[in-house]
Image 1: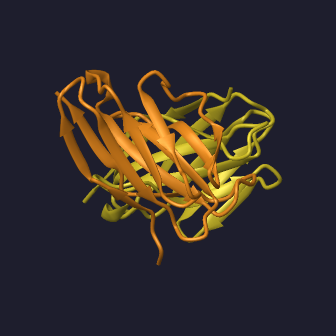
Image 2 (image 1 turned 45 degrees about the vertical axis):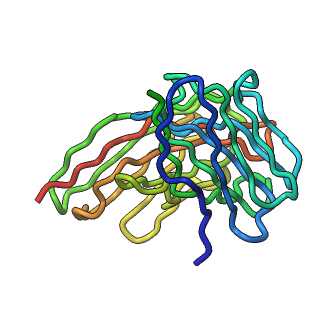
Length: 115
Length: 113
């Protein structure tokens, strides 16, 4: 069964450093999502792509976060500079289409710790 | 935007008993409500979902009910087993968006022997 892939699985960095996370969605999935999950809370959407275009980045802290999906396949989420409050699990998800109620499949996540 | 509240935050049941988790949502136009199970250190996985044109849906030991008038939906797990122990999240699809899910804060279910 195809799954969403993410790397790295764990990342420890010092504040003010730059970090990058990578996501490879399920083949053929046009829609890709990046979520942030703080310990003890539900996932919160940061950015949504439809193919290579951003359709929602209203919750993305654009002063330090950036995301791209240049060829409409895999995606990279970057944080520069990282802050202590960025420590969280970063989850990538994908769905076949951006339709009402299309199932979102999650990757294993990248756990970020900022020291 | 949509706001989803989930209760309880923790739930402990004995093996074989039933477990019920409840969620409320704020946007009456929301029309899709999935439930995800997240085991420790693993990815969230969809276990069941319901759309607003249906009041109840069942899949083996798992069922979800939806009350559109009251804007709440519930997850029911019967004959619980130790492998049901996990964190469960409800979510609602925000109206006016293509596929933006708003998640609840999660319920940690512990099934004891």
